[in-house]
Image (cartoon, rainbow, N blue to C red; front, side):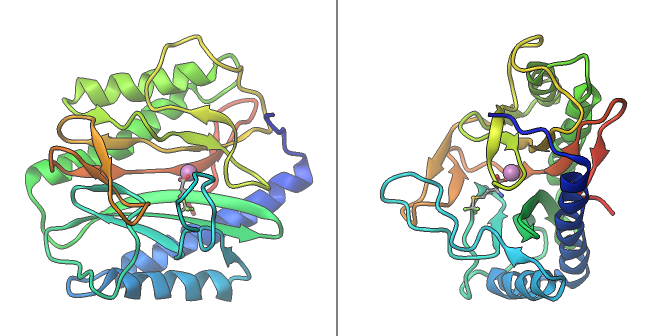
Length: 256
Ligand code: MF3
Ligand code: CO
């Protein structure tokens, strides 16, 4: 069921989303080569809690049998890791890495969800282009995130744009509605047919999240039950914001 948020609920959504934006501001400032992904996780958890929010990914159950609850505040996925990398004291971030971070804050009963891919120091031109295209894929998609269009129009544009740049989209994971639950209807694939799916209406809050691979689209899951990597070892990037559908242009809630 797709939920339409009331004015009051939208205010609360904005608060949760602002926490996420502030958390990224802090992470971007503090991210340095030599740090572990666990240290980043600590920074994020402290920031969120200091802003009156709870890290919603911590303890989150994805609902697949045999997969343990997610153990951290952040997903930190480096280079060929696509999503859901688990922070660890043994994982050191190096100059030239591309680091995809995904996190969700829960505040006053509502969730805000966003992902960013950061370039650490100086990376290759190709890595920079991948990160740029992934971000732009989000902005291409949301050109259709308004009344008069359907979910399929957003999905189609994301996939079409990414493919036009010579990259692949991940097919097994997708964007989603968001609100009281982290994952609500509708699912929002990063590819698809224009003109399909539900109509977009004011009051819908959606997490749009292109996951882009430099090489082939195929992915693998590591034995930890979470980490997703590219099968061909090529780089991957992720960019996500929670948006609000309005009468006109969408509002991006997870950017300050
Ligand atoms: N934040 C992710 C998303 O964009 C969900 C990660 S799964 C979790 O939908 F277990 F880490 F929360
Ligand atoms: Co999401």
